[in-house]
Image (cartoon, rainbow, N blue to C red; front, side, top):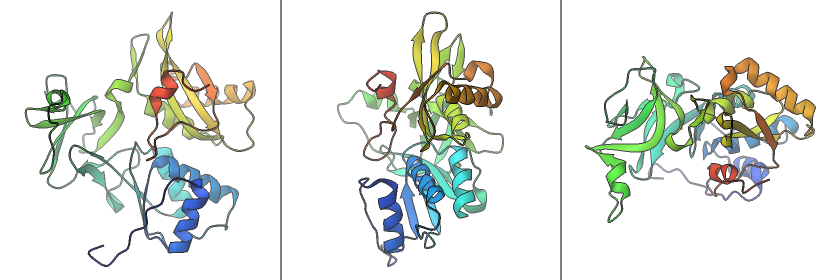
Length: 286
């Protein structure tokens, strides 16, 4: 705004039609929204080609949750625009990993923003080798403290902020999201990252949204359950389940594949678009 720009704040009421309409009416040039909103808008752009004018957009930024590579590629194919991914935290008051323009690598969050340092560490804060999962630790010029709150003891250790995310650092310095540290699924001794399974499901043309959780199982300890929102017109049948099973089997190693599928009208989300995975995990939804 200091440079003369104006800002439009819109609520989530009205769904993708409202957001696409606002872009057209107000000639929005830079869009900030969650990955689920990009997928919902994509569905509208595909089913109603030419109905919405988004030619004013020149930048798209994803926030709130992990951006699946499938969503990035689908949006780019449909619009020609490259979504800028990134991760920040309320405690750090700023995005600390990101990449833009030619530096974007779909499927990764990016590299440390200038002024911030990031590393992937084990439980003792020792850096883990590139390519191995660990806890994301960040430090930089911004931050805040929890006053009279036990979270301060676990969130900040030796000057590093532990975000609660599991990440992998690639050899070229790019950081790749794996899962929230408390959302890892352990099945028959294997660690399974839900977002990897979700990304595979989103590559199926019949899937609009997907979320993966673990369900207790007497034999395996935990099994992978896929909660899926299908595109309009796709039947919730055993044939659809079989097709999704075949797709994930072709995309993933066998132990990562969902063993149960649940079809929903919509995934539970907060007002800002973040997935409420606990509601799926606790059986709060059918």
